[in-house]
Image (cartoon, rainbow, N blue to C red; front, side, top):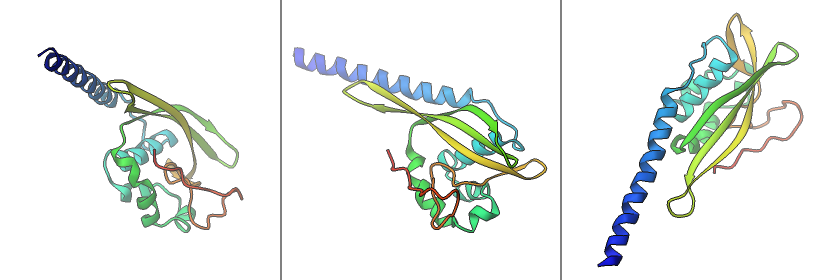
Length: 168
């Protein structure tokens, strides 16, 4: 009888842990600052939302510059970002920094919560950078393959080989 009671308590604790994780993820989603669409930060925000939350790779692909689209097909973006759709992530702005040639670098922190040992949530964080350029007044587009895609076939870029980031 005491074994059954102990299993019941463990089940209740597990449900409470899972419920608290869900509440924190949902609550964090509501508290997100909305950036203007005509800013680099707003473009990064909408691109990630299109891939991760809205499952709309067509909208995400529209944020690539015409030059980048010459090397990155819509199919490539869709195939290399598909893993992200079911991930429990939080993304927050770290900084936006102007670069030479009218480009801007936007850095974000990506945090993922997963269940580790029994009933123990684990969080891992890392930063990702995006490079955008203003194509016309208030129209910002990615000029380097954006995360989670990270590479395009035959893209000359800056000469460094690009490899896809493996799915977690």
